[in-house]
Length: 330
Image: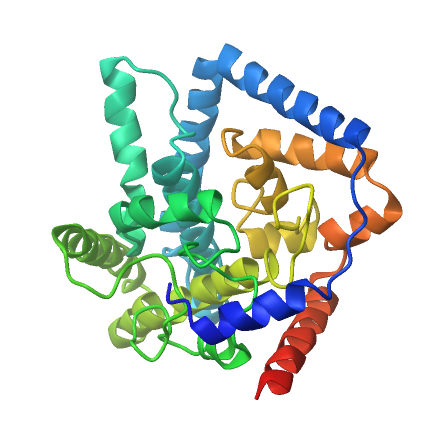
């Protein structure tokens, strides 16, 4: 993801104007204790954790293949939306929690290492490069909101965000607001392209029995990636945009609700991004539990700052504020 100096400069000015109620030492201690407790529970039940991850991945892929066998116009609409959502959610899960944080398969024996390798590379079938992501993602946690953050989204120029919602934005050069692959061609990017096309061909073969071949090519290569990438840009923009905190990471929770699961890519995606930044070692289901604890210990003003109750309303408000800062800087 490209970061422009004008965005960094605007964020430096805007950050000073954002007010946030400080957390008390009791609140911070409670959050820290809960994080450690949840991590211990995960590590104490590694095989159950691994099994749950494999079942989830298998079920999502099975559903993905199934929807491409549906017939009629309604079947075509369903497969476009469902595949787009699975493409997004499963990529987010296997690339972020898998390749990025190695939290899907825990353990060090040979079988588990092989399973982990497969899971960490699964995002390639959806045209996402896990190797590129592994190289860039650590900066997001180590330098959140700083110039070194290679996923800096605290203040992105509105026209860059809006361009990312256009069809084809995930792959074309007119959009430089993306994180799943770099512009340079590498062996890893080539492998991703080959595996992505291979899986797309399987989906196409399933669909052409009931739908027009050319239309299916368009839907698989343009339509469903558009659904996926749009959700991804909405999430990555909203979880950090104009987010300030002196006590916790500068991230917000989309939350355990319909909008959180939709924009976050499912419960296994990133509906609880603040919880993830507080404790990156927690798997998705423990992030949900930590998020519930955050809500419990925070004051109403703090919840208003860190949590999103209505995504459309919040995103619209953030975009307007963001645009206003850039207009002032012209």
